[in-house]
Image (tube, one colour):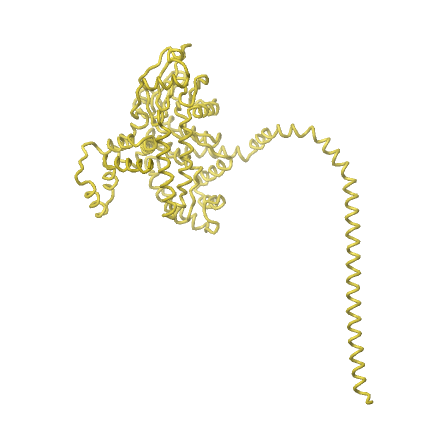
Length: 523
């Protein structure tokens, strides 16, 4: 009943804000336009379509808000009025009351707010779909940011996820294409990541891991966690001072090299993916700032670590080989990799898949990013994948989403950015490190503790092996004697059969001769 009630609420919200009118108005078919006229009879919409869409997503809850956040970075796929309005969802979701936040903080730490902080601002500085952030000052004078989980999130998310699971099962039963896209597995992955976001201690540990990984890169800053003040519903971290990356005009006025900033973003992404296998998977502009402080001028500031992606060594190697093959326009190798990975059926013709991939990708090379419509590329690749029954890999869904976010950010920063040319040298260097002498040395270093544990045992193991060798020699002699005895028994049996056969043949011959003599000699 709760799911049915939620479904009715979603349908009511769609009708109230005219989302059906927004969706149907983009079709050119006459019958669809006629349907749009019929379903909107008696309804008037005074607000712009972008405002209506944003308000509907806010009213429907955190899952729908996240969907809007992802869409807001794709200005190449959306009208500008809708993209501008959805951008407000990145860090401007309506907050919950500050006094309620104070109550949640006191409940999490079991102390009064003034016993933990010398100052706590009840007005949030950022409000997102899952939590909101307040600035505060610790008793020792350190300036911090306090992230507080929205109350009642678990029940809302559980209801929406139950609907998504039901919808995914319905899609798999009714559509062959849906079964190939594995919607149930994709929703299951989304389920895991959303529940991870509801545990802020997990987010704090993600931030600590990313901070260690990025130490020494000098391109990105990650806030340090105050572990004594971290709980599942509230975490306290170092306050970061930066300018949102979406404020490009302000960054340019401050003297930030915008093209370099765009290239650094690509470098950070590929470093996290291919070097560490641990990457920030929610890189919309609301979570990325740029430092204007003299000591860290022009560096990225990463925020919100609720969704992080991980890749295995096999995933990294496979993806790197695919990227490099694309950069080299070696479409045959791309097709072979799809076959080797099991993404396409075993009987797929390599030459046909190679030709299809070439037709999709070749027209888009040697163009600046502003001239490439990734939406069109994805549409063509989807048509190609449907033709060849390519199976979508759910474990790479986050990476695909993050790559779209990175491209969206790069497009906003520098429309002339060549994403492929920036990434190619990095990937080639990474592959050389995986298969060259450096890779061998690194692997030996990795295995050194194992070898160090085994080496002292080698003399004892060798001594035991030498002691067992005479016994093994005696066992071999016994086995050989048994084999010889069996061979003798077999030879005697064969000889008996042979002599029996000869005797039988001789007996038959003698009987025939006797019968003939009996016939020839009269009585």
